[in-house]
Image 1 (spheres, rainbow, N blue to C red):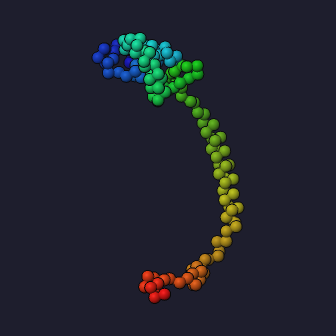
Image 2: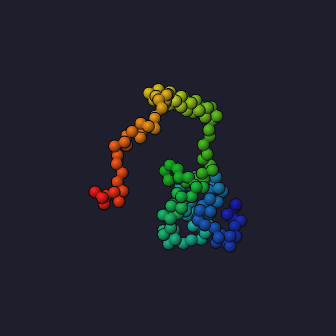
Image 3: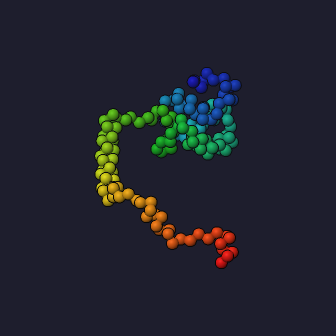
Length: 145
């Protein structure tokens, strides 16, 4: 969208971040925060008082808006201009490392499992023998005592 072709009615419905997005899109390069905010204020015909009052809010807006990215030395740009390039060979190397780590973990689990006697059945009678001396007293029996 070209900002020069935007009507005043359309401009009134646009937010600061939409105008900032259009400015950065047109410029095609990163800008300092203050320069970008001054550009937004100029396009939206805002006076100096508004500039002074809302610069911190504008910074917060850019920080939380996913379309923008903060760069070194106070520069801001569109996130779409800063995508990371992933090499397929890098992904394959990571997969190999993950496989090696998983193999080591599997070997460790196998070593731990060798100490568990899975052939021994736990007899339910053994568990019942544990409670053979236990006496249950209900309220009626308690009164008789």
